[in-house]
Image (cartoon, rainbow, N blue to C red; front, side):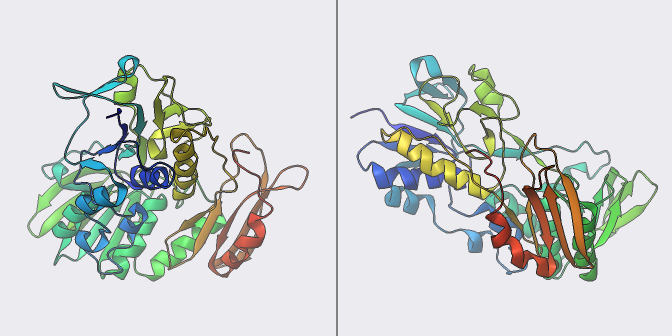
Length: 382
Protein backbone atom coordinates (compact mmCIF):
# COMPACT_ATOMS: atom_id res chain seq x y z
CA UNK A 1 0.00 0.00 0.00
CA UNK A 2 1.22 3.52 -0.80
CA UNK A 3 2.04 6.04 1.91
CA UNK A 4 -0.97 8.07 3.10
CA UNK A 5 -1.88 11.70 2.83
CA UNK A 6 -1.94 12.76 6.48
CA UNK A 7 -4.00 15.69 7.75
CA UNK A 8 -3.35 16.91 11.29
CA UNK A 9 -6.58 18.42 12.59
CA UNK A 10 -10.27 17.58 12.26
CA UNK A 11 -11.83 21.03 12.43
CA UNK A 12 -13.44 22.78 9.49
CA UNK A 13 -10.09 22.93 7.67
CA UNK A 14 -9.15 19.28 8.08
CA UNK A 15 -12.52 17.70 7.39
CA UNK A 16 -13.38 20.01 4.49
CA UNK A 17 -10.03 19.37 2.83
CA UNK A 18 -10.61 15.64 3.24
CA UNK A 19 -14.06 15.93 1.62
CA UNK A 20 -12.73 17.94 -1.31
CA UNK A 21 -9.79 15.54 -1.76
CA UNK A 22 -12.06 12.50 -1.81
CA UNK A 23 -14.14 14.06 -4.60
CA UNK A 24 -11.00 13.93 -6.74
CA UNK A 25 -9.10 10.91 -5.39
CA UNK A 26 -10.84 7.88 -3.89
CA UNK A 27 -7.78 5.61 -3.88
CA UNK A 28 -4.93 7.28 -1.97
CA UNK A 29 -4.85 6.24 1.71
CA UNK A 30 -6.05 9.11 3.90
CA UNK A 31 -5.37 9.56 7.61
CA UNK A 32 -6.64 12.34 9.87
CA UNK A 33 -5.03 12.81 13.27
CA UNK A 34 -6.52 14.95 16.02
CA UNK A 35 -5.70 15.67 19.64
CA UNK A 36 -9.41 16.05 20.46
CA UNK A 37 -12.37 13.69 20.11
CA UNK A 38 -12.69 14.07 16.33
CA UNK A 39 -16.36 15.00 16.22
CA UNK A 40 -17.36 17.03 13.18
CA UNK A 41 -18.88 20.42 13.94
CA UNK A 42 -18.94 23.93 12.54
CA UNK A 43 -16.79 26.20 14.71
CA UNK A 44 -18.81 29.36 13.93
CA UNK A 45 -21.79 27.66 15.57
CA UNK A 46 -20.00 27.70 18.95
CA UNK A 47 -21.19 31.29 19.37
CA UNK A 48 -24.85 30.44 18.60
CA UNK A 49 -25.38 27.46 20.90
CA UNK A 50 -26.91 29.18 23.91
CA UNK A 51 -29.43 31.13 21.85
CA UNK A 52 -30.46 27.88 20.15
CA UNK A 53 -30.40 26.00 23.47
CA UNK A 54 -27.98 23.40 22.11
CA UNK A 55 -25.41 21.54 24.17
CA UNK A 56 -22.17 20.20 22.69
CA UNK A 57 -23.89 17.04 21.45
CA UNK A 58 -26.50 19.22 19.75
CA UNK A 59 -23.79 21.06 17.81
CA UNK A 60 -22.06 17.84 16.76
CA UNK A 61 -22.78 16.97 13.13
CA UNK A 62 -21.08 13.56 12.99
CA UNK A 63 -19.03 11.23 15.18
CA UNK A 64 -15.46 10.37 14.07
CA UNK A 65 -16.47 6.84 13.08
CA UNK A 66 -19.09 8.19 10.71
CA UNK A 67 -16.58 10.68 9.29
CA UNK A 68 -14.03 7.91 8.71
CA UNK A 69 -16.61 5.91 6.80
CA UNK A 70 -17.80 8.90 4.80
CA UNK A 71 -14.23 9.88 3.85
CA UNK A 72 -12.89 6.34 3.33
CA UNK A 73 -10.21 7.36 5.78
CA UNK A 74 -8.78 6.55 9.16
CA UNK A 75 -9.43 9.08 11.93
CA UNK A 76 -7.14 8.82 14.94
CA UNK A 77 -8.61 10.70 17.91
CA UNK A 78 -6.96 11.85 21.16
CA UNK A 79 -3.63 11.49 19.37
CA UNK A 80 -0.97 14.16 19.66
CA UNK A 81 1.75 14.56 17.03
CA UNK A 82 4.98 15.27 18.90
CA UNK A 83 7.40 15.86 16.05
CA UNK A 84 7.73 16.24 12.28
CA UNK A 85 10.73 15.16 10.19
CA UNK A 86 10.06 16.71 6.76
CA UNK A 87 13.39 15.56 5.36
CA UNK A 88 12.34 11.92 5.72
CA UNK A 89 8.59 12.51 5.24
CA UNK A 90 7.63 11.19 8.64
CA UNK A 91 6.01 12.38 11.81
CA UNK A 92 6.28 11.22 15.37
CA UNK A 93 3.59 10.27 17.88
CA UNK A 94 5.63 9.75 21.01
CA UNK A 95 8.12 6.98 20.18
CA UNK A 96 6.19 5.83 17.11
CA UNK A 97 6.93 7.17 13.64
CA UNK A 98 4.65 7.33 10.62
CA UNK A 99 5.70 7.89 7.00
CA UNK A 100 3.51 10.11 4.83
CA UNK A 101 3.22 10.89 1.13
CA UNK A 102 2.05 14.44 1.85
CA UNK A 103 1.40 16.12 5.17
CA UNK A 104 -1.17 18.86 5.80
CA UNK A 105 -1.14 21.04 8.90
CA UNK A 106 -4.71 21.99 9.76
CA UNK A 107 -4.36 22.28 13.52
CA UNK A 108 -5.84 25.77 13.83
CA UNK A 109 -5.18 28.48 16.39
CA UNK A 110 -5.15 28.60 20.17
CA UNK A 111 -6.72 31.12 22.53
CA UNK A 112 -4.37 33.80 23.78
CA UNK A 113 -3.61 33.30 27.46
CA UNK A 114 -4.48 35.99 29.99
CA UNK A 115 -2.29 36.36 33.11
CA UNK A 116 -4.64 36.67 36.08
CA UNK A 117 -4.04 36.59 39.80
CA UNK A 118 -6.36 35.24 42.48
CA UNK A 119 -7.42 31.91 43.94
CA UNK A 120 -9.99 31.37 41.16
CA UNK A 121 -7.64 32.12 38.25
CA UNK A 122 -8.08 28.54 37.04
CA UNK A 123 -11.81 29.18 36.60
CA UNK A 124 -11.24 31.13 33.38
CA UNK A 125 -12.94 29.26 30.53
CA UNK A 126 -12.12 29.33 26.83
CA UNK A 127 -14.38 28.22 23.98
CA UNK A 128 -12.22 27.37 20.99
CA UNK A 129 -13.58 23.93 20.10
CA UNK A 130 -16.53 21.66 20.78
CA UNK A 131 -14.98 20.19 23.92
CA UNK A 132 -14.34 23.66 25.33
CA UNK A 133 -17.92 24.63 24.58
CA UNK A 134 -19.13 21.53 26.38
CA UNK A 135 -17.07 22.27 29.49
CA UNK A 136 -18.22 25.90 29.60
CA UNK A 137 -21.87 25.04 29.06
CA UNK A 138 -21.74 22.49 31.85
CA UNK A 139 -20.11 25.03 34.18
CA UNK A 140 -22.84 27.65 33.67
CA UNK A 141 -25.77 25.24 33.81
CA UNK A 142 -28.25 26.68 36.28
CA UNK A 143 -26.12 29.81 36.78
CA UNK A 144 -27.12 33.35 35.94
CA UNK A 145 -24.27 35.80 35.35
CA UNK A 146 -21.33 35.47 32.97
CA UNK A 147 -18.44 37.87 32.47
CA UNK A 148 -16.70 37.96 29.07
CA UNK A 149 -13.10 39.08 28.68
CA UNK A 150 -12.58 40.74 25.30
CA UNK A 151 -14.67 42.96 23.04
CA UNK A 152 -13.59 41.64 19.65
CA UNK A 153 -15.72 39.76 17.14
CA UNK A 154 -15.96 36.55 19.20
CA UNK A 155 -16.56 38.39 22.47
CA UNK A 156 -19.46 40.30 20.92
CA UNK A 157 -20.94 37.12 19.44
CA UNK A 158 -20.69 35.39 22.83
CA UNK A 159 -22.36 38.38 24.54
CA UNK A 160 -25.29 38.27 22.13
CA UNK A 161 -25.61 34.50 22.32
CA UNK A 162 -25.43 34.24 26.12
CA UNK A 163 -27.98 37.04 26.44
CA UNK A 164 -30.35 35.16 24.15
CA UNK A 165 -29.74 32.11 26.35
CA UNK A 166 -31.05 34.00 29.37
CA UNK A 167 -27.79 35.01 31.03
CA UNK A 168 -26.87 38.38 32.47
CA UNK A 169 -23.68 39.39 30.65
CA UNK A 170 -20.86 41.78 31.50
CA UNK A 171 -17.96 42.51 29.12
CA UNK A 172 -14.51 43.75 30.11
CA UNK A 173 -11.90 44.91 27.59
CA UNK A 174 -8.99 47.41 27.61
CA UNK A 175 -10.20 49.31 24.54
CA UNK A 176 -12.36 52.32 23.81
CA UNK A 177 -14.83 50.61 21.47
CA UNK A 178 -16.09 47.20 20.37
CA UNK A 179 -14.07 45.37 17.69
CA UNK A 180 -11.43 48.12 17.41
CA UNK A 181 -9.40 46.20 14.82
CA UNK A 182 -12.42 45.79 12.53
CA UNK A 183 -14.83 48.70 12.84
CA UNK A 184 -14.96 52.49 12.60
CA UNK A 185 -16.28 54.12 15.77
CA UNK A 186 -19.82 54.70 14.48
CA UNK A 187 -20.37 51.07 13.49
CA UNK A 188 -18.97 49.90 16.83
CA UNK A 189 -21.37 52.24 18.64
CA UNK A 190 -24.30 50.72 16.73
CA UNK A 191 -23.35 47.20 17.82
CA UNK A 192 -22.78 48.41 21.37
CA UNK A 193 -26.28 49.89 21.41
CA UNK A 194 -27.75 46.60 20.24
CA UNK A 195 -25.95 44.60 22.92
CA UNK A 196 -26.82 47.09 25.65
CA UNK A 197 -30.47 46.87 24.63
CA UNK A 198 -30.23 43.14 25.43
CA UNK A 199 -28.94 44.04 28.89
CA UNK A 200 -25.21 43.55 28.29
CA UNK A 201 -23.10 45.80 30.53
CA UNK A 202 -19.80 46.98 29.07
CA UNK A 203 -16.64 47.99 30.94
CA UNK A 204 -14.34 49.36 28.24
CA UNK A 205 -10.91 50.52 29.37
CA UNK A 206 -9.98 48.47 32.46
CA UNK A 207 -8.38 45.03 32.58
CA UNK A 208 -9.13 42.11 34.88
CA UNK A 209 -6.51 42.01 37.64
CA UNK A 210 -7.78 39.34 39.98
CA UNK A 211 -10.33 36.55 39.96
CA UNK A 212 -11.25 35.06 43.29
CA UNK A 213 -13.87 32.92 44.94
CA UNK A 214 -16.67 34.66 46.82
CA UNK A 215 -19.49 33.40 49.03
CA UNK A 216 -21.91 33.00 46.12
CA UNK A 217 -19.67 32.43 43.10
CA UNK A 218 -16.80 34.50 41.78
CA UNK A 219 -15.57 38.03 42.29
CA UNK A 220 -13.76 39.95 39.53
CA UNK A 221 -11.45 42.84 40.42
CA UNK A 222 -10.75 45.35 37.63
CA UNK A 223 -7.80 47.71 37.28
CA UNK A 224 -10.04 50.75 37.78
CA UNK A 225 -11.12 49.56 41.22
CA UNK A 226 -14.47 48.03 40.22
CA UNK A 227 -15.55 44.72 41.70
CA UNK A 228 -18.04 42.56 39.78
CA UNK A 229 -19.78 39.46 41.08
CA UNK A 230 -20.40 36.68 38.54
CA UNK A 231 -20.82 32.93 38.21
CA UNK A 232 -18.34 32.28 35.39
CA UNK A 233 -15.70 34.05 33.28
CA UNK A 234 -14.99 33.21 29.64
CA UNK A 235 -11.98 34.57 27.76
CA UNK A 236 -12.40 35.81 24.20
CA UNK A 237 -9.30 37.97 23.88
CA UNK A 238 -8.13 36.58 20.55
CA UNK A 239 -6.42 33.68 18.82
CA UNK A 240 -2.83 32.86 17.91
CA UNK A 241 -1.99 30.44 15.08
CA UNK A 242 -0.33 27.27 16.33
CA UNK A 243 3.22 27.35 14.97
CA UNK A 244 5.47 25.77 17.63
CA UNK A 245 5.60 22.25 16.20
CA UNK A 246 6.14 23.61 12.69
CA UNK A 247 8.98 25.85 13.87
CA UNK A 248 10.59 22.94 15.73
CA UNK A 249 10.50 20.96 12.45
CA UNK A 250 12.37 23.74 10.66
CA UNK A 251 9.39 25.07 8.70
CA UNK A 252 9.28 28.81 8.04
CA UNK A 253 6.88 30.58 10.40
CA UNK A 254 5.82 34.17 10.89
CA UNK A 255 2.41 35.05 12.30
CA UNK A 256 1.34 31.63 11.04
CA UNK A 257 2.97 28.73 9.21
CA UNK A 258 4.28 30.41 6.07
CA UNK A 259 2.86 28.99 2.82
CA UNK A 260 2.72 30.15 -0.80
CA UNK A 261 -0.33 30.32 -3.06
CA UNK A 262 -0.14 26.52 -3.51
CA UNK A 263 -0.28 26.28 0.31
CA UNK A 264 3.19 24.74 0.32
CA UNK A 265 5.36 25.30 3.38
CA UNK A 266 9.11 25.83 3.12
CA UNK A 267 9.58 22.04 2.94
CA UNK A 268 8.41 19.79 0.11
CA UNK A 269 5.33 17.63 0.70
CA UNK A 270 4.22 19.66 3.73
CA UNK A 271 1.23 22.01 3.36
CA UNK A 272 -0.88 24.12 5.71
CA UNK A 273 -4.33 25.74 5.61
CA UNK A 274 -6.89 27.24 7.93
CA UNK A 275 -6.24 29.33 11.03
CA UNK A 276 -2.64 28.12 11.41
CA UNK A 277 -1.56 29.17 7.91
CA UNK A 278 -0.19 32.46 6.64
CA UNK A 279 -1.04 32.39 2.93
CA UNK A 280 1.14 34.72 0.88
CA UNK A 281 1.36 37.01 3.91
CA UNK A 282 -2.33 36.77 4.89
CA UNK A 283 -3.56 35.02 8.04
CA UNK A 284 -7.37 35.22 7.87
CA UNK A 285 -9.23 33.46 10.68
CA UNK A 286 -12.53 33.14 8.80
CA UNK A 287 -14.49 30.43 7.01
CA UNK A 288 -14.53 31.81 3.44
CA UNK A 289 -10.73 31.79 2.92
CA UNK A 290 -10.52 28.39 4.60
CA UNK A 291 -13.00 26.90 2.11
CA UNK A 292 -11.17 28.44 -0.83
CA UNK A 293 -7.94 26.88 0.45
CA UNK A 294 -9.55 23.46 0.92
CA UNK A 295 -10.76 23.39 -2.69
CA UNK A 296 -7.41 24.52 -4.11
CA UNK A 297 -5.27 22.22 -1.98
CA UNK A 298 -7.46 19.20 -2.77
CA UNK A 299 -6.67 19.73 -6.44
CA UNK A 300 -2.96 20.08 -5.74
CA UNK A 301 -2.87 16.90 -3.63
CA UNK A 302 -4.69 15.00 -6.36
CA UNK A 303 -2.08 15.92 -8.95
CA UNK A 304 -3.34 19.21 -10.43
CA UNK A 305 -1.38 22.04 -8.75
CA UNK A 306 -3.80 24.92 -8.10
CA UNK A 307 -3.00 28.28 -6.57
CA UNK A 308 -5.57 29.63 -4.14
CA UNK A 309 -7.32 32.89 -4.97
CA UNK A 310 -9.20 35.09 -2.53
CA UNK A 311 -11.91 37.33 -3.85
CA UNK A 312 -13.68 39.75 -1.55
CA UNK A 313 -13.98 38.13 1.90
CA UNK A 314 -16.72 39.95 3.84
CA UNK A 315 -17.41 38.71 7.36
CA UNK A 316 -20.94 38.37 8.73
CA UNK A 317 -20.78 38.86 12.49
CA UNK A 318 -23.38 36.90 14.47
CA UNK A 319 -24.83 39.75 16.54
CA UNK A 320 -28.55 39.67 15.71
CA UNK A 321 -29.12 42.44 18.28
CA UNK A 322 -27.48 44.63 15.64
CA UNK A 323 -26.77 42.87 12.32
CA UNK A 324 -23.22 43.52 11.12
CA UNK A 325 -21.26 42.72 7.96
CA UNK A 326 -17.70 43.99 7.60
CA UNK A 327 -15.10 43.79 4.86
CA UNK A 328 -11.82 45.26 6.13
CA UNK A 329 -9.65 47.10 3.58
CA UNK A 330 -6.86 44.92 2.12
CA UNK A 331 -3.40 45.05 3.72
CA UNK A 332 -1.27 47.94 2.58
CA UNK A 333 -4.12 49.85 0.93
CA UNK A 334 -4.66 53.33 2.36
CA UNK A 335 -8.18 54.71 2.37
CA UNK A 336 -10.56 57.16 3.96
CA UNK A 337 -13.77 56.23 5.77
CA UNK A 338 -17.02 58.04 5.18
CA UNK A 339 -19.95 57.30 7.46
CA UNK A 340 -23.67 57.76 6.89
CA UNK A 341 -26.67 56.88 9.02
CA UNK A 342 -27.44 56.96 12.70
CA UNK A 343 -28.42 54.71 15.58
CA UNK A 344 -28.42 51.05 14.59
CA UNK A 345 -28.21 51.73 10.84
CA UNK A 346 -24.67 52.68 9.85
CA UNK A 347 -23.15 52.63 6.36
CA UNK A 348 -19.39 53.11 6.61
CA UNK A 349 -17.40 52.91 3.37
CA UNK A 350 -13.63 53.08 2.85
CA UNK A 351 -12.40 54.49 -0.49
CA UNK A 352 -8.91 55.04 -1.82
CA UNK A 353 -7.69 58.35 -3.26
CA UNK A 354 -9.16 57.48 -6.67
CA UNK A 355 -12.59 56.69 -5.24
CA UNK A 356 -12.36 52.90 -5.51
CA UNK A 357 -14.10 51.00 -2.72
CA UNK A 358 -11.63 49.22 -0.42
CA UNK A 359 -13.91 48.01 2.37
CA UNK A 360 -17.06 48.61 4.34
CA UNK A 361 -18.84 48.15 7.66
CA UNK A 362 -22.64 47.87 7.51
CA UNK A 363 -24.95 47.63 10.51
CA UNK A 364 -28.70 47.29 10.98
CA UNK A 365 -30.75 47.82 7.83
CA UNK A 366 -27.61 48.87 5.90
CA UNK A 367 -26.49 45.21 5.67
CA UNK A 368 -28.95 44.85 2.78
CA UNK A 369 -26.42 46.70 0.60
CA UNK A 370 -23.68 44.12 1.05
CA UNK A 371 -24.22 42.19 -2.18
CA UNK A 372 -24.08 45.32 -4.35
CA UNK A 373 -21.00 46.55 -2.51
CA UNK A 374 -19.26 43.17 -2.70
CA UNK A 375 -19.13 43.48 -6.47
CA UNK A 376 -17.07 46.65 -6.09
CA UNK A 377 -14.53 45.27 -3.62
CA UNK A 378 -10.96 44.42 -4.64
CA UNK A 379 -9.71 40.83 -4.52
CA UNK A 380 -7.45 39.97 -1.60
CA UNK A 381 -5.40 37.42 -3.55
CA UNK A 382 -6.02 37.71 -7.28
